[in-house]
Each structure stands twice: as C-alpha cells, then as structure tokens.
Image (cartoon, rainbow over all chains, first blue to last red; front, side):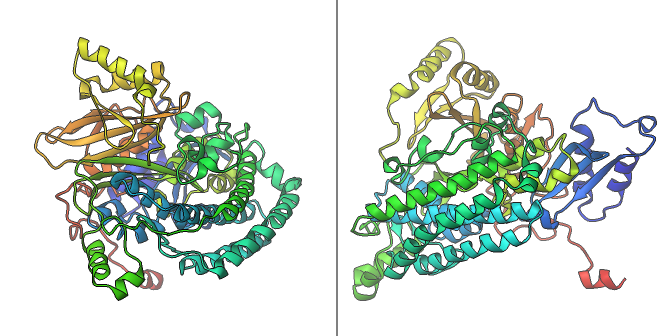
Length: 429
Length: 176
C-alpha cells in the first residue's frame, strides 16, 4: 500500500491518469489487502513495465503487482499509439481510408485492406471479379505467413535464441520482395481497391510466389525440427500462460489464442468470404491452451496457408481485376488517360467515392493473422462513413493477456506477451 | 455477397422469443440491414434479454460492442452488441439506445467478461457510462482528457491545450 501511494504521487505527467491506473490495481479484487505484518520480507511490489520496453512488442504498458516472483494482479495500459483512426475514417472517403488500415496491423497490411474492401463491398453491394478475389486471397495468405514469421522470430528470441530471428526475417524478406512486385510497395501495400485490386499479378511476381511456395515448406520443416524437440524451448513454453476453452470464449479470445485453447473458430470457415469455401484446408487446433499449443497452431497455420496458396495458383482464373462499373470502382488507368469519361469517373471516385445506401449497416469480418478482424460501418448515404468501427483482434487478445498473467511467474511475462502476439498499432487504433 | 445465411429460419427461435416478449411487456423491434439480424431492445430490458440470449440461445461469445453517435436529440447514442452463437454458427446484433442527457446503460460485463474493455472504449470515446462496471476507466486516452473524441461535435483537429504535454525536451532532461 505504501509503495502504491509513493508511486502514484511521483508522476507529474498525466497525473490523474497515473493515479487512476495505479488505483485500479488496488480496486480489482477488493478482498485482497496488503498488510505489512503479513509481509515482513517486503516481497510485494508493483512493477511498471513499458511502454517502451523491448519485450512488449510495441508500446504496451503493464502494471504488475508482484508477490515475490508471482504476479498477483496485472493491469494493462493501452493508448500510447492511439491515433484516432475511427475519427479520421469519418472524414475520409472509403478508398481514402485504406492507407490508414495498412498502419493498423502493420505486420499484415494486406489482410487489413481486404477486410475494409469486403465490408464496403458488402455495404454497397459491389460484385468483385473472380480473379481479383483470388489475388486477394494470395495476398492475404502471404500476409499471414509474414505475420506469423515475425511472431515466430520474436517469440523464440523471447525464449532466449537470438539468431532464430534472423532466419525468420530472411523468409519475411522474400515475402516483402513478392509484395514489392505484386503491389508496388514492400510494407504498407494498399493493394486492394473497392471493387477489385489495384493491378494484376505480373509475371515476375508470379514467379516469385511460385518459388516461395516451393521453398518455404522446407524452411518451415527446418524451423519445426529446430524447435519441436528443443528442450529449452519446450520447457520454457509448456504449461505457461494457460487459457482454458471456457475462459477463452468468456474473455473473447480470437484467432490462434482461441484455437490454441481448443475451439476451432476461424472466420474462413465460419462465415466464408472470398473463395475460401472452395478451398481445401484444415483449421489447426490444440487443446492445451498454453504457449506451446499456440506455437503449434501458428506453425500449422503457415503450413495451411501454403496449401491455400498452391490451390489459388492452380485455379487462378483469367479475367478482369476490378468491377467494371464507374459508380462502384475506379476505372483502369488506360481509361483515365485515354478517354474523357474515364477521367471524369476517376475524378468522381476520388472526390465523392462510392456512396452506399443511406442507413445501411454492415459488419464484415476476415480471419487476419491475429484473429477476427471486423469492420462495422454505418452509412449516411454520402461518400464518407457515418461510423466506422474496427474490431481489432489484438485489442481482444490483450484483454485475455490481462487475465492470463495473473498467477504467472514474472520470468514468463515476456513469453506470454510473445505468444499472445499483440500489434499495438491495431489494438490502440 | 449472397452466400451469407440470409434466411429467417436460422433465426426462427430468436424471432419467436421477440414475438413472445412483444406480447408481454415492451416492444423489441427487429430489422436486418445487410445480413445479420438486429434486435432493438429498450434499455430497461437489455440485461434480461442479453442474459436470455446467452443462456437459452447459446450466444456465449461476445465479439464486439460498438458505440455510435446518431447526433440527434433524445436517444443520441447507440450501443450495439455483436454476438455469436457457437452452436448454430450464427451472428446476432442487439442494439440499445442511450440518452444524451443521461447516457447511462447497464453493463454487460457480468454476462461476458470481455464486455469490460469494449465498454471502457465506448466510455472513452462517447462518454456513455455503464452501471455496475467493475473498472470504468478510459482505455486509450489519459484520464486527464476531458472530452469525448468520437462525438460528432468534437473537431477533427482536436482541441488545443486539451492534453497536458511535457514542458521539457529530452535533451534538457538529460543535461539537468
């Protein structure tokens, strides 16, 4: 109690915020009280971790109340990366908002683009050509592998092996090269467009994707053989950060956290979008709910992504890549440069954009690498959304983290954060 | 996007439940915009309805709670609960309204634990209070911030001076 008061008195910056943050720790379980006589060794303390701590994967701040090495209570402080994208969205056209989605879950920008496009297309009833849907699937699955590779590298680094990070980044680099060829950007791709995609797959991009699909499974096998029976890695992760199935559902866990806890909930199967209903793939699931289970789930997801990529490449149909309707999608650059109508339509799309019917509401979710990424949009009939809400999987999984840290050891904190795999850009919006 | 489950028979039990409720007490209205069925529930029936949906209709998974600002007098704010029935694989939206003068809504965090953070977010962005919430603090913005940024009257550029910024630069701190 003394320590809490001392700590809450010291900060001068955002005073009220710090006070209520520290106070929340005391209030969380009112039955627990500090008594100095119980604690002659003074082993209880409050540890402030972050917001700029190398192991919190961004600007996550944790407040941990410790008893010796055990975490008694944990509180998370978000908002260090809050940019108010939902407010920005209300002042932009639907297409103008797309670059902002790249910067939400910046580890898999492609999935975010696709999620926004699908929500707007459902709202405005836009039909997307088949080829564009396949290109989107290819992009989204590559993004999943890329995001999972970053998770793998950092999580293994969190458990002590630094060089592993370099190997997963070598593979990620290949995906960046593919994105460069596919979308024209390596990192923030903004490749999807409402009504289709920006440009078709070039032959160079196709060759790179085919090569990646050929070589990556071998690398993945290498990662497996290095970690699956690695004594240190397994001992550090088994039975750590356990979330039971009931708890995962009650806490609203999503993505690999929920699947690692034994519930096969995957939007690609639950509410199939794009062409996922025609694809043959499994939903990896584990029952244990610990870090190791989440490791296996993500590793197998990468394997399934390669399977989906192979099927996409086999079935990729020929045809247009964007809806051919000037009221619904941008015209192609050929039209813009060589016809008056094309230029007018391009101008109208940029100035006003697509106008969904007044009063329409939509919720559309996709399975992003972190879990269910949903966009809720309310339209007022203009080119700007009246309300756009992002249902960010990292935000939901961080709430699971707050609960699952309780009772854990302080030395496992970093690993549990690593296995939850939050992206603060998305959680903080 | 016609491959969604658009048929009413998926929701027949929910519609029967709404009909029953309509006959007995308050009106619960139903509409469907793009795909998911939406129930508009009066505030005083909210917790009862949500509990019933969870316990009798298996909506055990809360996906999201959305707040919106309709920018009208009276019932200005909308709170939408996005629920999933994991048994039958269907989605349902429950909507309730909050008044502008007394924006108070009962908290659903006793029904689904994860409602807690979503309600904190709505409190942060719209200033809607949730009664019997275990820990109603702002989730993104500092407590020192006095405005609710997603309300329509809040300017896009923000309000100058509304956030207390450090007076010193890192260089000054290093030298002192």
